Image 1 (cartoon, rainbow, N blue to C red):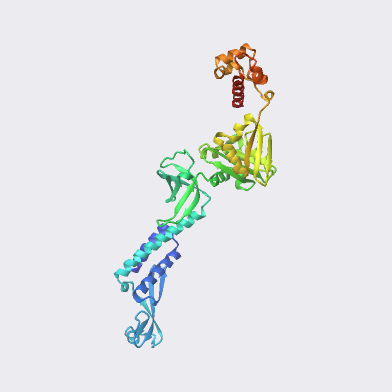
Image 2: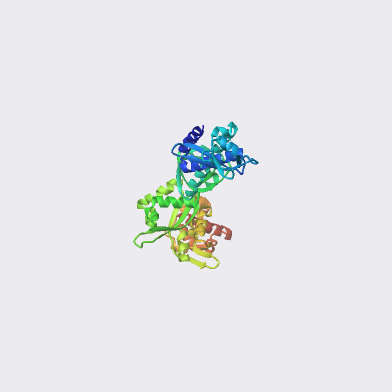
Length: 415
């Protein structure tokens, strides 16, 4: 019977990939427990699992006495003699007896099977936990097998990974059966087994994608100095080359953008700005606010605050859609950034706008009045200013200022 038990659990161990020595330890622990259940906690026993023969041998060691007071630790000299006493042992010496598995009884054998099952399940959980604990911070590739309201379940090497909603890229669509890449973010222990949390929204996922797509980063020639990201929207990544012959930004972008495009596609078209890192905070802030053109940066390093000055037409680029550009720049540099708007001199505008192109915005009446007063372009009106416009019949101060503001806004949009 012991061979049956060992073989059945050896098959389980083979399927689960558990080490043979570990199995031996489990079997010895379980059967030692059974012997002590039958003979008492004080019983001296030895359980040996023979891996070559595939069976279990159990030995009970008891002291020889004239009169037995504790059957679990003592045996009478009469009983020893009845068993043969081949070694001619005497009272006071120890008698070692081999125990047959059947002598433990059906109930204890059933308990042995249950305990072995339980131990192997626990061991399997530990193996999975340790395996994924080693993978924290690394990318894994799996197949989506279930999409739920608040998470997506992924099959990876027959193990379940969980992609929670807050670790997903916003608005990303998932399909059952499709392959997905994510980073192992956390491994938690729970009663039902390890819970493996993966992420596509974590900064580390972006870092690992850069390591995969850009060999210079993987080899350590280019170092990633900082990452700021709003998943699915935009990301900024600061890089520095350890080799003066290699352009860090150029290497990350690749020929015709092929390297960066591969990462952008993986991140559902998330825009990625790659900037050169520098220890100079003024220059670093200026680079981090790209593509906006900055005129001046004033830095308070102690307070970690900065004030940037830019033409009014650049403010919308500095701030970005819904403020994303300036938020990411602040996270990347670690500085709180304020923006000062400077009005751009009209002669600095590269192109003029014909008033006829703004007829709808101005309204037909205003347009006709301006044309009749020899104003043909927007710059001509702006250069004249509100005071000059107020000399025109029908244009009061409010009307004149309204026209000026409208034309300025049009130039900012053009820029």
